[in-house]
Image (cartoon, rainbow, N blue to C red):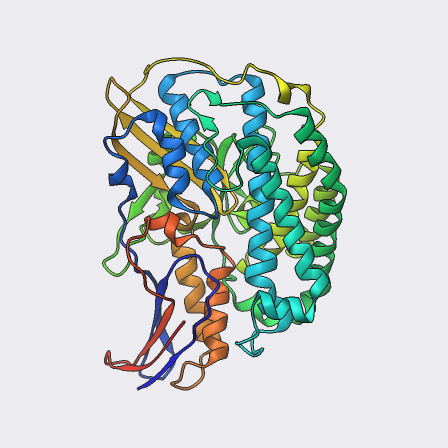
Length: 472
């Protein structure tokens, strides 16, 4: 048995991959284990509804805005109120800022070292610092773009991380004209960076063909919220499922009734549950969410530059669904561009300065569901409360959970293609991690972590004997 420890990882959270060989020496089974214990939903019991947005925002430091807004929407349902128009627009603006900052982090800081330096590049330098040495302007652009998204969040919520701003019924305060002017001044540079990044990605497509064909390229369902007219949506709308041909399998589904079409399966080897599309059964009901799914599900992006990019994206599959999870990166960049174009539209709206930003009400329903699109995919918060608004039960289905079956299938496809012999090489390890990273998973969000374990890959023989392992 050979043990090699590598101290660098670029996945949020910690996990384990196990590979099992058959008698022919080929990979027969691959599993992605999430090894952190679930618990956050129980921590919420006994807390009040009004605490939940700020409380759940602290599930994660990367996507606090996603939980903040989704929790507030669950609160809206329990109060049974219509959020003021200004509050709806302000929440949308913050979510767009979250898309920019989170997607920029994923592409420029976590994935670009592999994509642009190479999968077999010196692991000691295959990170954001190595990228800064080799491509300093690109690294700076990534910092600038993420900072712009963070400034949008800060301008509304008062802080870049864990803003306690959205509340059941609306938001705490509108945008100031001074903050609007500062955000407008930064838009041209942000738009330039987003367009340059898309051009860079498109220029490297030929070089990445092996990875595109093996990093989770398989037919599946895709799920996302879409607007009533089929336009790309990030905050409201109805659920749509499409298949690998981009045929609509189900449309107009109410997110509040998710239990009618989504079920969750548990397995003894992972703390992360396995959601699936009920009608297709388990595990055939595998579906994907997030940037790739949103671009496959929508009819249009709804903004000029992003629609042009969507047409090029769709050309990869001749109008069918783009099925390679490697292209999550491509979809992520197109969504940054769409978010920036929509931010530009929002900043011209006088409703952003309206003082009417919160609907006041008491507990009118004992159950409510919040749903919206987080950067990583569809997010669901489901609460049950008592007459005093105290949480008695909570269920959270996050993007990484929706993608769990797909991530496992991706790990298997990569291992079957790249594993040669009986040793886990650095190249294989990095590609396995890169396949998971394409989904931009947030393991702490998905299981609400307790404990710590790094990414670890174990290789077992056909009789269950441990042959080799590597750990980051």
